Length: 324
Image 1: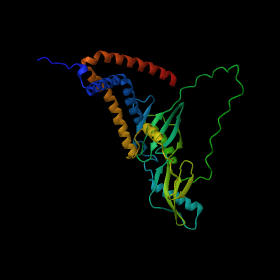
Image 2: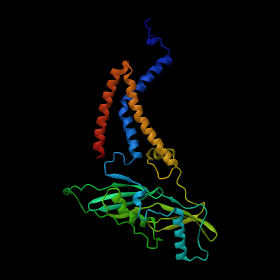
Image 3: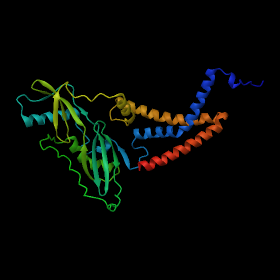
Image 4: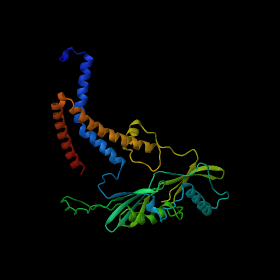
């Protein structure tokens, strides 16, 4: 028996509206297909810096530090105890300072970072003291282009940048600190990661935060092994980060990426980023497949895809020129 098609004009209003919504959803999805793939792939690249890297980049594990000062890294509590011992020896207070309850932790940043130079090549070393893992990334800059001829209307001379602020001489330095261990082990880590060993310069480290009991009062101390500075505030009066507005919170959520060394909420968020990256790519590819099953939409769908490819290609070329 032949199927009797209900005239479009006789369909209920709700059905006609939903039909048009489905068609708009389909064609809008086809037109935005390149953008869906772009955002899905770039979200994955943000979350996994070594994937499809455009420069030599290697992840290294705990074995890279075997036989170096990084092999037996002191825990945050052991480092805090060493800081307090050095402080007591240096200051000789009437009542010795003591480690308070709560333990020590890393704060400020999660990693140590150093730069290394081997001949005309430079590298960046990132090290997580919690997991004893890290990344080596080549940062060699291309040779600078020859300076252009001075403009006929140029006046004056460019001034050299101001030198960085020197490290304070009265900082508390500890033997076997994170900085010394990372500096000593850096060439070995580079060699084991397949890069030439070079001169290593540590540029940043996480702060060490721990409670200190001084004169019957508990303080929250912050020690930076890079500068040797030691500061403290009464426990419970630590400065809080400014309140996040809804806009800043959403922007920081969008930009937050990568897996931290410890399993925490940021690690769970990174899983969500990977899931969203997969979902975007899957949505785009599966949408194309489902579109091919609808004979009535193949021709207009091809037109929309052609327009999408043209617009996406033109924008990509224009953005490449703008960004470069």
